[in-house]
Length: 408
Image: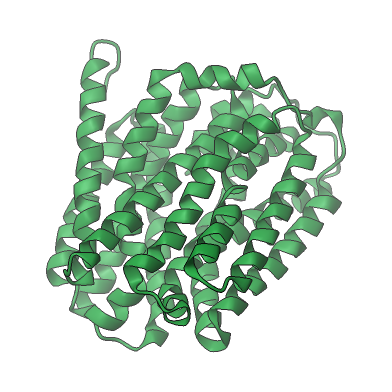
């Protein structure tokens, strides 16, 4: 998925392949991937254990979504602010700072005594995410050169995808077994290992020095970039209108044992991984059709889930379908954003992740509104339906304005 998306971004660094030994390249890539796995696990695990921390903190599910939204806003605000503030910082130093901040945020999450403090802790945990992936793209370009850095970085981003299949279900199981606070402590411990790996395996070199703040800011003058952010923020939100409430869906709607929640998370993650691969092909082959196809199929899957999701034989295929259909659309968004502003590599990488986490906040917020209004959690996917449909409409309006110069 992300190979094509970051190809233009990595090429903008104008880096030749590193002369470092092959084993150093492998270890550096492992360190970057481990970091992205930790970050992805932390983001998605919060949705799998939402019932646990809601009960412990004495709040209802709609109120508990504030923590999910807080993390998302941390990514959204942290992506541009941290990236710009650290524009001149060496990428190795930046990665170490970001992973250290992420570890601190998860330790604070485990210590929170109320929803306010927990939301603040999740906000802190989210701040490093966007900048981490943007800086990671530049480091990948250093090792593999511009022509191969996109593919190399796709392996780094695999950590985020794998987190939805293994990391989040395992973290949820750990929360059910030992307690939700131990989930965050365990992630902080693994993040410390990732921090050590980054320290040991990412080389100290001036080739990874930062760039001009003005140069990065120039990308934010592009209307095309902002249009794709809006389309992504609205459209992708349907994933989180389902994922954020997957625990209550399993136990309250399908009426399965809580031990089934990790299985449901895994099914959703497998769907996202399959859609990831298909979406990469669509983004390489077509200019825009992957987005329309992915959004359209997601709308169909959401309707089926809300209509028949109480039946486990429909519920699990629908989870797979929502994850696969939406992820099939995301590579097209990524490709267009990075191609619109390849001169601002780190910032565009950060803004890509920021757009996805605006969707995270919108999806959790929309689903929470539906439940707070007294409707069954089964109808939370319909909030995602409305948001994704709005994103598709905005996209079609933007596309119609470019019809004279862009061929679908």
